[in-house]
Image (tube, rainbow, N blue to C red; front, side, top):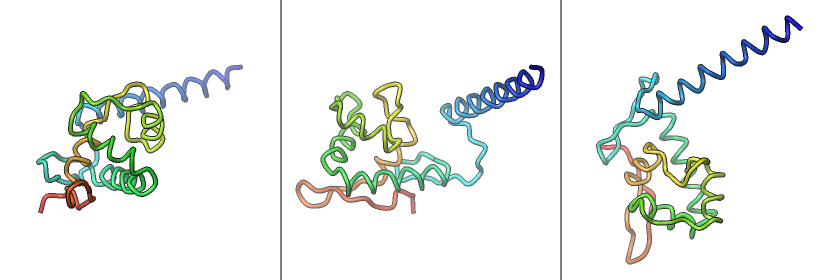
Length: 130
C-alpha cells in the first residue's frame, strides 16, 4: 500500500507540473528558445508551427469545406462552427476541446499562412516573416 501511495503521489506531481507548463504556454511563456516570427508579427515555437501547418494542410486536402469554415472562424471569432466541423477540428487539434475557441498560436499561424487564390480559392503559404 505504501508503494502505491508513493507512485500515486509521483504521478500526481507529474500531472501538476504538466498542467502548469500547459498553463504557462497558454499565457505565452515558452521554454523553447527556437521561436519563429510569423507574417502577422507574432511568435510561436518552431515545433508548434510545424504541427499546426501539418494539421491545416491535412485539413485542407481531406476536409475542404471544414477548412474554409475554419479559416472564416479564425478571421471572425463570432462565426459559429457546425457540430460536425467542431468535431473534425478537435480531432485535428485545432480547437480547444473544452470550448469553441481557437488557441492564439493556431489562429496566428492560420492567419499568417492563408492567402486568397483566384476569386474564391485559398492557398497555404509559408507563414514565416521573410
